[in-house]
Each structure stands twice: as C-alpha cells, then as structure tokens.
Image (cartoon, rainbow, N blue to C red):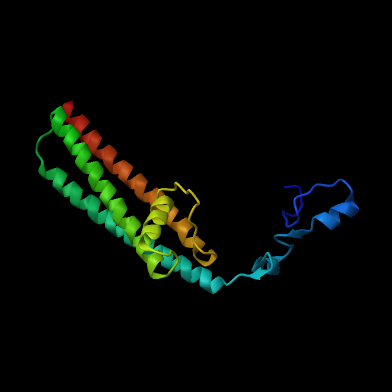
Length: 188
C-alpha cells in the first residue's frame, strides 16, 4: 500500500468528478485512523476485547470437543480395522470397507456439527434447531451460502467453526488415505 489510508464509502454510491459535489454526495470516513487508540473504535463502535476473548475461548473449547470426538472415532475405527487379518480384501469387500469408513467419518462430522449447532441454539444465536444445524453444517464444511448469519457478537465463532471443519476434514482425508494405502500394500 502506498501510505494511503483504507477508506469505506458511506455515501450514496454516486460518482462525481467535481470535488465540491463529491463531498456533498459521498462522505468518506477512515476505517482505521493512525495510531493505536484508533484500533479500539471501528465504524464509530467501540470494541469489547473482554467479550471477544471470552467468545474466542468458547470457540476453542468447542474446537477441542470436536477434536476429542474425532480422535475417539478414528481410534475406534483403527482398532476395528486392525482386527481384520485379511491383507488384501477382494473387490466387493474393499468397496464395502470404503463405504463403511466413509459413513463412519460422516457420522463423526455430523456429531461435531451438532456440537456447534447445540451451542448456537443454547445461546439463542440461531432461532431453532433446524436453522442451527443447517448453519453449522454450511459453516463447518466451508460452503458458506450466507443465507443465515450469526449476530455480530457471535461471528468469531463461525470463523473458528469453519477452521475446525477444515482441520477435521483434512484429518478424515488422511485417515481414509491410510486405509487405501494399507489395502494397496496388501496387494503387493
């Protein structure tokens, strides 16, 4: 950036080349002014750092619950898979294994989505269970349709839920790949 301040247009959106008409049609206010005290105010509102940190703490607890659910579910599945002694399953058995593992992984993700949805419902951040589950699923999977949004004080949780979903989906992908690799190694 060339030393210019970021600006937000609060005007009517009309464009004018004349500076006198421009000031009458559009008012520009800096989003962030120079100096640290300006960080405490954005668009004329003060920022409550205590509330923001407490909500971030809540989001981290919810993320930890998701990690526990995922770790327990993946560990259980690994124990079940290690019991099978068949080195390389036949095609039908391999397909059945993939379907069962995929279903199990999806159930884990749905449980994690339900944890977030339950919290949103408990805090009245969503109007009903269906909306909470839908919003949570769309956020967790980072689909982000935008037809339902959290109130401003809860938006940080939505972002952490999306990051949690990315991490848990990545973990699931790694787990699925490990199973495929194990089966492939059995054919060698």
